[in-house]
Amino acid sequence: MQKTLVMMMTFALTIAAQAEKIDSTQFVAFYNYTIQTQDDEGRNVTDSLRLALLVGTHATYCTTVLAYNRDGRASSEMMNAFIMHHQNVLTDVEKSEVTALEPIYPYRYLTKEPLAKIAWMLEDDTLAIGGLLCHRATGKLYGKQWTVWYTEEMPSSAGPWKLRGLPGLIVKADDSEGIHCFELYGTKNEVRGIGTLDHPELQKLSRKKLMEFKKKTLGNQRYTKEPTYYVAEEPDDFGEMRVNGVVYYSANHMLIPQKSHVYQPLELE
Image (cartoon, rainbow, N blue to C red):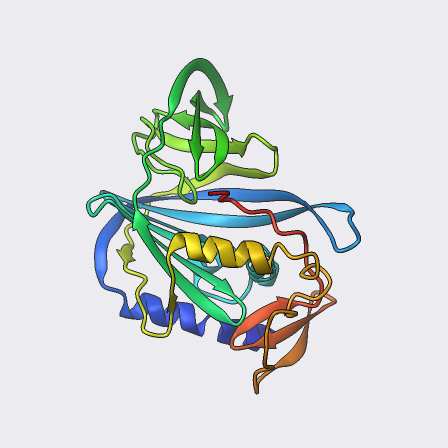
């Protein structure tokens, strides 16, 4: 299992090794990301994933802690990353551009889009989170309404995923439906390069086309019980592997669940 998980990271590490450096980190922020959803039998479940946000002077990169650590030890994180189809998000404020890399079996997709400007409404409410004095703000991004808490004690406009643009680091973010939640659990002073995500083997799509594809395939009722229903041909390296007592499909250096959870989109428009 360990060897297979390390092999699954080869592609991501190849991208990192070949990436053109565009910035260096000032610090790294770590978040717990949870999603309230349902399993294939309709029972309520909570999916969770740890994220690492690399914060530079003009660029940020949000990825999984597993990819940040560059090893195969956090197998449960790798499973959740594929179940939830987490995006690796590079935000380049200097270019006013957001690049996202997302693995959806059997391909890895790359999207580029202009940096979205969120019309945040700053509010007077304050709250102490993890020893940090935080301020409340609300805003809308891609059809979802968000309530966030940010701290001016860390003067950075960065935040997890594609959330950003406040007078301090985002410490917590919840969508109005109570489905998605990002919450800071630690920071680390570290100098590390932030590079581009481009690679010739990536499938390039517009953000809206990828969103439509995900809605059509992952949002289909069949997906929870048969996550590979939409794949026309079975790849040569298609097989099975057991991770923490659960059997998964394995192909193209990807883990695919035999059964999955209900797709909960982060973007509605």
